[in-house]
Figure 1 (cartoon, rainbow, N blue to C red):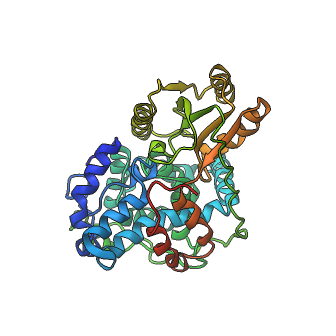
Figure 2 (figure 1 turned 90 degrees about the horizontal axis):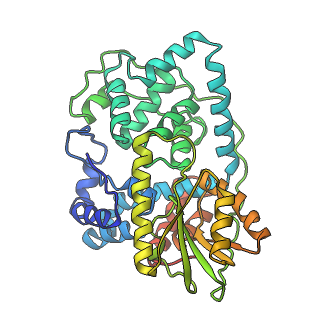
Figure 3 (figure 1 turned 135 degrees about the horizontal axis):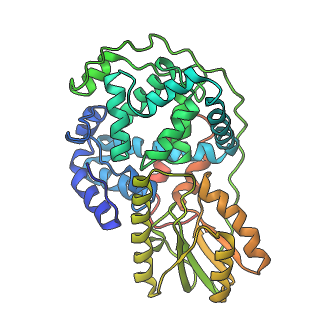
Length: 402
């Protein structure tokens, strides 16, 4: 199992997978061959997560090969992450609640020996549930789990092992190469009946055996019911902040983050005189996840440097705001352009950075891809109403910004 770490490799992977993105994908997408088996999905999600390759590029390639009808299921799966991101973008409080819950629950572990023991057995893959234990090791070793496996894993974690979903989401977020704040957090909430009120997902031994090709016996008893988590209050959606337009006459620097490693594919306004990136992706990612993100960032930085004819710099994330202010001052910048990061650690850092730069007379401009600009306002309710926006998304050019 390997994942593309450069844009060229991601485009090559897409080209190789496109013949399978039609009816074959729809028929086999839920089957999981494991880390040594034949993949039934594209394995492009880590590249899409860091935007080595964009959603419209991936969708357009599948439709060109199979038509919309043939590629519809694949395109919908591509759009699920867009939907999750748009939904959370309009309800950032859910992300803040989850972060606070994780801190609180980790502190509580020391006070409950039985809970702590179950938690440690789950984290190390020693529960006695053969599929779950294998998935733990697969996740840690590869940074990946098949989507249907993720659903069963979360269900067993919450309803069989009786562990809080918040800590399971933290485990996934630490290891999964494609985990983003939205799809990871909201996916776990969906399993326990918080995202779609009262609708839970119950892992079934027969289905696990079937979709794994019989790799697991699943002899250990699984929970027979999935009682929804106590309902919480979902805040009403708030519109995304409007995008600030760039000044094409300003002395401008380009700042590449791990949220979008293909800024050079966009129509950048004005002349760019300086180029930088930071290695910060937030949190404490597992070494493999950090390594993959840094490889994608390095590729994105080099591609931007080649297009712009500039020598790239690395801004030390340890010093954060001060390092960025120093970079702007050394290059006499009055404007810095970067990608508009959705809710998550990078956005949190940009929110702190913007006023600090403004105090120095430097405007931080966050470019938002047109795909996000069009999609996010439609993510107010469930995915099925959101599907109505997919034709609008497919009509967008891949290089457009909002």
